[in-house]
Amino acid sequence: MPSSFQKDFADPLNGPSRGRPSRGPRRSRRRRLKAHLARLRLPIPSQWGALSLGLLTAVASAAFAGLGGGSAFAPATQHMSLSVQPGLGTGGHADLPNPLAFSRPGETSPEASDAGSPWHSYTVNPGETLSQLGERTGLGSSTAMAMARACADTYPARKMRAGHTLRIRPGDGDAPAAVRYEIDDRRYLAWQPDGDGGFTASIRQYPRTIEVREAFGRIDSSLFGAGNQAGLSDKTIMELARIFGWDIDFAHDLRPGDWFRVLYQEVYRDGEKVDDGAILAAEFVTGGTSHKAIRFTDADGRTDYFHPDGRSVRKAFLRNPVKFTRITSRFSRGRMHPVLGHRRAHEGVDFGAPTGTAIHATGDGRVAFRGRNGGYGRMVKIRHAGRYSTVYAHMSRFAHIREGQRVKQGQTIGYVGQSGLATGPHLHYEFRVHGHPRNPLKVDLPDAEPLPKKYRAAFRKRSHQYSAWLSAVGPDSVRVASAQDADSSS
Ligand SMILES: [Zn+2]
Figure 1 (cartoon, rainbow, N blue to C red):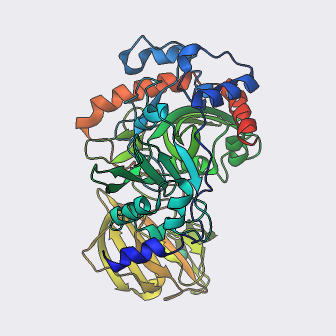
Figure 2 (tube, rainbow, N blue to C red):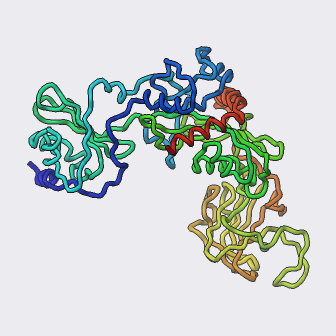
Figure 3 (cartoon, helix red, strand yellow):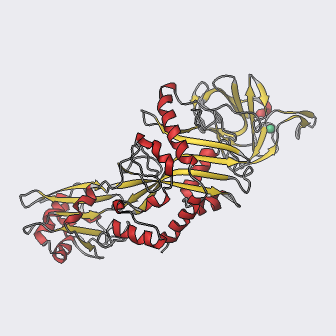
């Protein structure tokens, strides 16, 4: 027997709990739903058995008829959910290769299907050894030993923590039918008897459910205020602002009465929300102008947002090459130069920022110049596709870029300084079209690459479905979302 295993077995399982506190035995989802609906005084159709709370916001009514080509959707009571492979996506957002691959509600997950056989739950005590835990739970010391041996490579017993849950499903004889240790929200360690007195152990993912929800918000004072009131998490609100940030200046353009509606996902495990999902489609109306964005994932797994006509919501250029900055001098055809002391045009915009602030390439392109250039000081010039070029001056130093190298939009190319003719640290930024300087703050920025032609048909279909659904989302959703808030805080 390997000594490391022996140590695992004897060591107390008393590390600090890193996961959620343990929960009692699984509550019936239906009971939870019933209680929830009762509080909201809504009818409970019997076929909703395994549905979770997300259906409360699904009021899409007739718009559903077009979804999935099925007329089987019952308007106003239908809810869609789908199982998703956990761990997909980035930044905590569940990402679906095909967000419209809805399964019918009520489908049971593998987890739910074994509900017929009772599980017994135990919480690991501080200072408890696996051996002691084995005795306390009735597994017995030798079974616990065999379990520790089985998981020595996949998830050694010494990593188990007080406060976490061990669940045991009794078998016919002495050996348990199955044992599980909850690692975190997403994973558990599963032991299966190998029929020979030993066990096999593996780490598995809890089945999770993605629920599609609707929200409608009207701006009163702030986007966050309206978003929270509509039931959106801060993370989803930020995502909304990121998607529309290319078209809407949220710091200056927002007016009371502006509104938005969103189809978005939430990730559930056993009826409990465990994560925010992606925004599938959204509309934002500011000053009477509607902006729409539809999420699309292509065959290579690249996900982006597009306008319903297939144009990217993104632009080929960022408006600002530095974050958290203030404009200290605007574009002008003629002004008094602070150092040279005579009138001359200011062919760019000055962004005041502390020395060392990162400067980002505003668009994809190739480094055309990197070096000192008279009054510009340390300067980078990037040549972009088509007729565009950008200039970044007065840098304190360059990032690791060479002339001729390709750079991506947002890539750091240098750092703010005051080299050349400059009275203080700032970035002098020029945006040129056919070599002629244009006002970077005012110029119409070209769109980023549109959706490739080969995906147009698939996107159009998706866009029609989402748009129809979205158009059915109105202020009524807010009321439901508020009720949802009240419940989750109880
Ligand atoms: Zn300048």
